[in-house]
Length: 400
Image 1 (tube, rainbow, N blue to C red):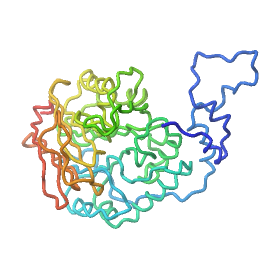
Image 2 (image 1 turned 90 degrees about the vertical axis):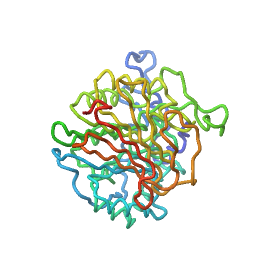
Image 3 (image 1 turned 60 degrees about the horizontal axis):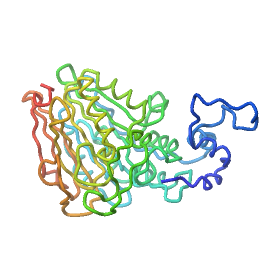
Image 4 (image 1 turned 60 degrees about the vertical axis):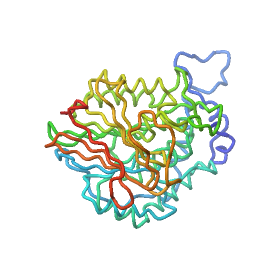
């Protein structure tokens, strides 16, 4: 989606500056001496840089989540991790109370944590700020926040606009709001760089769990629109053979390679959009097959064992497995939605899927039985009952 730059003029950013920074200047391009009026090399190179002075002086109320329990100690052996996605603060979220009453080590919000799309394209992002404030005030959220430590990444609706990627011009402010809401400290590495990707390792040797939270928005290039809108498997987007497409951006790819080389027994790679699902034409890694292959290669090349993908976004839950892309089977658990379910069932085609999908309100649980050497991937319903489940031997995924 192309940003109508004229709307940015209303926030005091000149059209000349924005036009100059709408495309980065190649490093090997020099300024011709015969044209002294060209924009200097000190000019902003991106919309985020052009808008930074405006946001620096913007006076706004900072929406912040209520304080919750500290994250687990680094040497704590995790045995139960709950997660969910697609959560609007504009209606009740009763399933959060169910989760709050269970003994999990932590809870992960994996995207669409609020629905604050910038429909007015106002650089102040009032919709996003209002929805963060609404979530902070929700009694069900406050209960969950008080009960369990939390980690979070974002997806499109808490990034700023449906299906948007790197071309969203207000993403720098969206990142600031995200970090403010989730209480990121001033020394948090995410405060010093672009993108909200993050990683944590818990547990002693032999019981180490690494949680890698990817940012599939800030750096992602445009998707390829479908040629048959609404058709099964081609609903919105098609896989592309464009070698220039990018899901994570150079800095995040390099960071991910470093993370996968860290010692760990079980690695949860959290992607807001699905990785292994191939049966639909909505957003997913399948729309960028070369990028997905790059991810699989990176897992192999780094020797990373114990990888399990965790995702949301789909307003339906499912379990997936692929056997032909790594040295061991790769599994994925998708949970969605916490309170944004659209149907009682989902019958989309399911290459790589294990069993049927589950469309009513749900959340996911990753259980780890270290003594038995087993993982349990569960989709649970409103009452906390498992409705889909897959057991995995740690030996099967190289984690034993």
